Length: 287
Image (cartoon, rainbow, N blue to C red; front, side, top):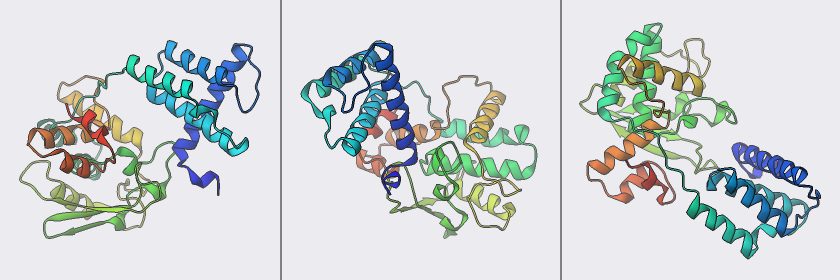
């Protein structure tokens, strides 16, 4: 039950942080005592900062130490004034600019036009057209669509989560990064007059998708689409367009959609709701 109290990816991050903390203490001749003295934690934060770690990574590692201490020691030394101030100072001084580029509507439409050149068959073309289009218009995270490390098939959007009705895709997202309890949310993505229309792409894909339960996006064999395949196909298709930048990632669809909404004049509340962000982090996605 304790293992299920936090997300799989969070648990993995905590374990990496605890391992890094242990290696740091070994390398600096510090005793492996729990709860760790404040000086150990303070020196660890300074070490991470000097090594160029992101503030978000350092915060996640400290959160792992916090969780371990509360679970096994009943106290939390990471809440001490100095620890928190060091993390705040790291956030102010170690700023990392997000260099990922947005997939614009123009680029998405061009991708749709070129996919047949890089896909091995017609089924694969329809699969990736639908996946790329939905990733953009529904502002999806790739982990909601494709299997990856730290993810499980049951957390993906399933075939039963999609309904096409009245020129609109009704999409139920049962689990996401900001919905760890699996309360779920339903999105309505309307058809549009564009080569990348998500309704048309989904309609074409569902006509050829195997009539089997499981993840929405799967190969003809029934095997789920993977994050690696999603990213690899994106890179290949961009190369046919003469785009060789490594800053286009799977998240570029989500970044591009948020940027497009902002440029179209939608207010912040609508953008935040569209991407299911629970904080103002959405602002960092707008280019």
